[in-house]
Structure formats: structure tokens, C-alpha cells
Length: 267
Image: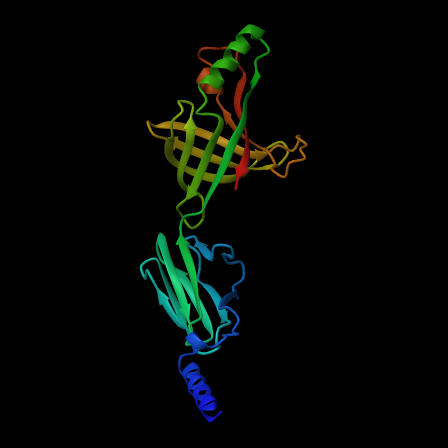
């Protein structure tokens, strides 16, 4: 019995010295609790935090583990930096890229946060293409011919996706990609945007001034389609381009012509 007690004492001492190997470790997992208002949130499924490079730093409390002082390591100091005063962890984006923040305690518990710093973008998929033509002095045959020509000249096709990527802090300009374009390829360019209001009803819309490769210019208005009722949670919107000037030389009786894309926001 004395030998048993002696061996048990040795085992207990070893477990005290090497806690990660021998203890049951009843500590709760290390987690981060955001204490910043209106800040990007962590994707809990992937432990990923996505920043815009213009975001301010995000503050967290660290909880869990053995409650001792945490050890924090940053895999890429060019992309993000951090400050930790023993109470609050502040993560600041620096430039585009990826990094990981690894947090450890003295009992072998750990937590790894993947950080992605990228520009904010928004995408719209085209679901239909139509025209709106006002030409009371044109024949129906000429109007149909014009409609077909306008749609054939459209910069996009059905199911094309506009992706606007904002490269400034105010989110008023950046790069644009249309894929596929009407030729089944990808068009790239730049854009600026401005919030405007219609003169008749005061309805707000976003005006995109787009310049694609080859100096192809488009001015499009993005506005909700309030006259459409759908059960789907995806609210359709209209991307409208006034193309009157493009076709008035060929069709002198044309009063106005608009190219209309019905689009839905992509997740």
C-alpha cells in the first residue's frame, strides 16, 4: 500500500508539472469577444475576420483558457498589427493580404484567428434585359428592329455579374468587372458612383459612371423595382442606361431609348 501511495504521489507531481499532458483540462476554450461598435464580426464557423483596409482597429476581450496572461503571435506584421495590454486586444489592418493571430495560454490552450484584409465589393447578377423606347412616329417594325439592336449591343448578357470593388475610404470609386460580357468573356474597367435623386419623385438611386477597356463608357442608374412583387427575399433592382444619343442618328424619330437590366444582389 505504501508503494501504491508513493507511485500515486509521483503521478500527481508529474501532472502538476506537465499540465497539458496529464490534466483533464476543464478550462473553457479561448474565445474573442468584440467590444467595438459597428465593427466587422468574426465568422464563427471559420474563425475568420475580414477587414477593409480603411477600417479602424477592432477591440476584443480574450476569455477562456487558464485565465493567465495570454501569449499572442502575429504571422504577418505587414498585413495587420495588434496591441495587447493584458486586458484588451486591438487588431488593426495595415494593407491588403492575409495573416493569422494565434493566442496561447500556459496550459496549452490555443485559439487561431485568420484575418483577411481586402477591399469591399458588391456584386449584381443580371436576370433579364429589356428596353424602354419612346418613338411615337416610328413604325412598330422599326421599334422592334431598334430593340433587337440595343439588346445585341448591350455590354452584358443575362446572368452576367457586375462586381464593383471600392478602392477608396469613401466607397465612391474603384474597379469594375463584368463577367461574362456580351462576347462571353470578362470586361474590366474603373468606375465612380454618386447618390442622386429623380427629379419627378425624388426617388434615390446610385449613378455609376463606368469606363471599360477600350474607352467604352457607360452611365447607369441603379434603383429598386418597387412595382414588382416577389416572394423571394432577393429584391430585384434595375440598372438603367440612357442610350438615346447612340441611336438617334440612325433613327431620327427616336425620342428616348433606355437599356434596362434587372439585377439581384449576389451574396
